[in-house]
Amino acid sequence: MSLFVSLIDLAGAIALLLWGTHMVQTGVQRAFGSKLRSILGSALRTRFRAFLAGVGVTAVLQSSTATGLMTAGFAAGGLVALVPALAVMLGANVGTTLIVQVLSFDVVLISPALILIGMVMFRNDSRTQAHDLGRVFIGLGLVLLALHQLLSLMTVYENSLILSMLLSAVSASWFLDVCLAALLTWAAHSSVAIVLLIMSLATKGVVPADAAFALVLGANLGTAINPLVEGAGGDDPAAKRLPFGNLIGRILGVAATVNFLGPISHFMTSIEPTSARAVADFHTLFNLVVAVVSLPLLGPYASLLRRWLPERVDPADPARPLYLDPAARETPIVALGAASREALRLADVLEEMLQGVNAGLAKGDRRLLVETRRREDVLDKLNIAIKAYLTSLDPEELNATDHRRLNEILTFTMNIEQAGDVVDRNFLPHASKRLKRGLVFSEEEQKDLTAMIGRLSANLKTAASLFVTEDPRTARLLVDEKVAFRDAESKATASHFNRLRDSDLQAAQASSIHLDLLRDIKLINSHIIAAAAYPVLERTGALLPSRVT
Image (cartoon, rainbow, N blue to C red; front, side, top):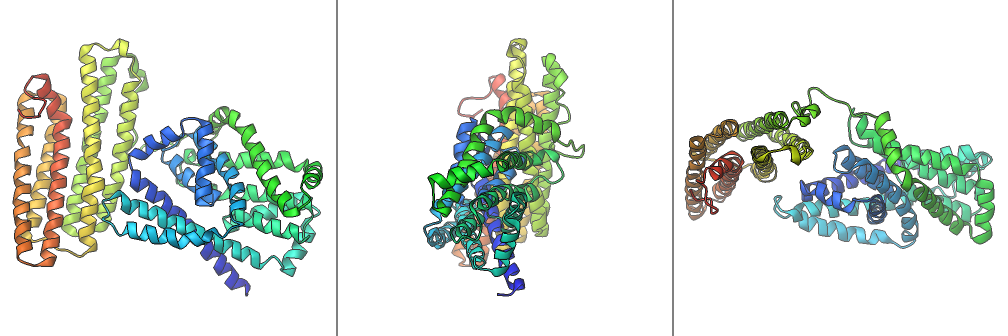
């Protein structure tokens, strides 16, 4: 096999591993969405549980690199705190030692089954959770295939004369052994494949025991490089805290161990004369010792990482709070005013989203829909910032009026954020489906959508004004708007049934999506009304528990 072909095969296997990892990560994010933060927060509440989660996830994904890349992505997105994320990485490193044992069996056999199950689930409606979980199963299958391919590529070179000469040359220097294995692991994106290769080489006597252990240390070091190089976060130094912290921890562990390789080698070979088993046991023992030593120190270590890599403040970042002054928390009335101003920014972002979907539908431009989806993240981050700010206020310093206003702010932000979720999870998938299928709305349907989105934007502006003025007359007018949206839905339903009777499949499919979009608009309007009108009417006694006024 020529060098060029070998490099292409290696690059292709690495690309498949990265793509499988990407599919698993995006599938999990899309399947659980806004629930992901609370799910992870519950599962990773303590560092020990996070450590066990890292072991389990790595055992499932068959790759600590995959776990590292996903955890780095979650940490960069703020879904996981730094301390539990570091604990996950320690668990991932231990999880790789389990994989070495598991890969003695042909686990790649389940890869086609995972891809088949994932494909069946993925063909479901894109709005369903099964569709997103299908993406996860497909990604898992691709990860297993990629790791099997990497292992096969490494096995080809076991008997390579050039490799034997190279290993013989570097075996005299543990430092060179560590660097060589780290480089190979970084290139292969799999410490498992490299450790299995080292076990095979040790069994055949190509490398002595102490050199094999040094190579294992290098493999453990190399697997920490990829999340740092390829992890999410862009130019924000804070996003690099987790992969950088994991790499530093690996370096310290390797540096502390390499000086004692002589005694360690003598001890390991005395209790386990089989070279392959000695390498596997050393691999497990090293990661367990590093985890036991590191877990109690993660708190101060995370604080040190935060000082080394402070969060970059981007003045142009739309998700950055502008009015939540920490000093104002000493004066509740001022703090509530600041939170109210920040809450109005959510209405502005939601209006931008409505304008984006309206333009995307009118022009048939999928790029506009993608840009609109990104704004939903801004809503999430602003909503979280406002909640954290308000819950930090001392309840003893708030009177009854302050408590009422605090609850109104939380109600407003929660409903506006949920309206954004409807745009992201319902409206945009329906709009994208229409573009993917090449369906065309009738002139009347397009006019209806444009008119209702325009009406929705007007109601959003009214809600923002009502949030400030708290005028009962405006609140009642806003609630009365629900009638127009119900009428539009009824009209669209009747039109859809007529299209079905006409036996025009294309027109029926287009009218079905048109009806779905109108229902989404109606739901968004309900959240807008609940955000501002209901609290005012409830305070004045004009709102019944059944919401009938």
